[in-house]
Length: 391
Image 1 (spheres, helix red, strand yellow):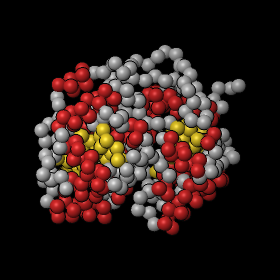
Image 2 (cartoon, rainbow, N blue to C red):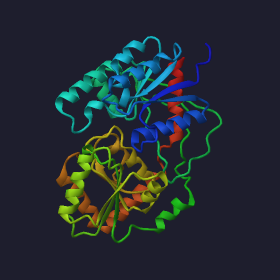
Image 3 (cartoon, one colour):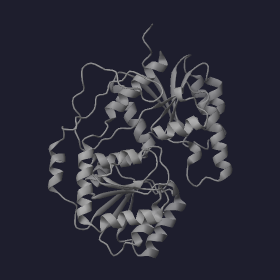
Image 4 (cartoon, one colour):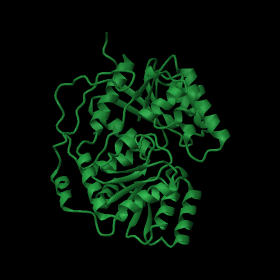
């Protein structure tokens, strides 16, 4: 059998530099594949997806038409699910792969008619994909419920940057267990739990501050649940805390205006900072400076920022969606039901009102950080999967 091609054409809507979880995933996978010798041709689609104009769809169709026969083309799910006609036209000529971070129809705040239209569109598009790559087992289960055959779904979970140092990569690849219903050969080169940098080892010498510094990393949209978080903290105003929210203020201007108004009305504007998007160096510094990570999200495909928080040794209070229940060990945080304001408030009160509990959770998070999955492993799994499809 001839060697499979090592060129991937990756189609991404909008700027690859967009600071959201899906684009962070795409950037790390691209870098990892290139390190492994793959040629990754990144093509930028219109940023109007998942509600593209006719011109945006025509551009996407022309880009796919320009690829040679049997080319391996992966399309980010933010666009793929909204271009079923293009997928149908090119399904037999190209090796189409869908990369689904979370189903389009499950975005919070969509009108019922819009959600139904997106689900219908995405179901049709996914039917054209040779393989559907998702970032979490729960997303795989959702798509299987939509009629995507389980054997065509593969899970390649994200990695983390974190504060741990990866063990040097082995020279020879080995075979790991199946990703999900489709086994592939991978190179499971992961961080050694005992190998951490001096800075991480020194974390134990710095307990949480007297006034806990909370951090939330999430775009200001309805789905991320900032309103629930602000209401919960307003009820806990007598306790010491401060909160820094990092995430775009521009994606949903209505949400941002409502949150700013809520802060003024509650008198918490001096304790809660809406910092907007931040460069990676500033984001890393924010993780390092925080004492507790909070994410009141209503829905996640995975929950990459939670994985990153744990990798930085931060205890977490978050919601049971995506992979978050698996990412947060019982000794490293508290997970509550999405949308449950009283439960969120109770979890915050239990930690902010009990310094010893915060310290114990911090110790648990620091232990868990050494077991964090690395981006190198994700890249090897993706490379093995793509090679299988290409062959």
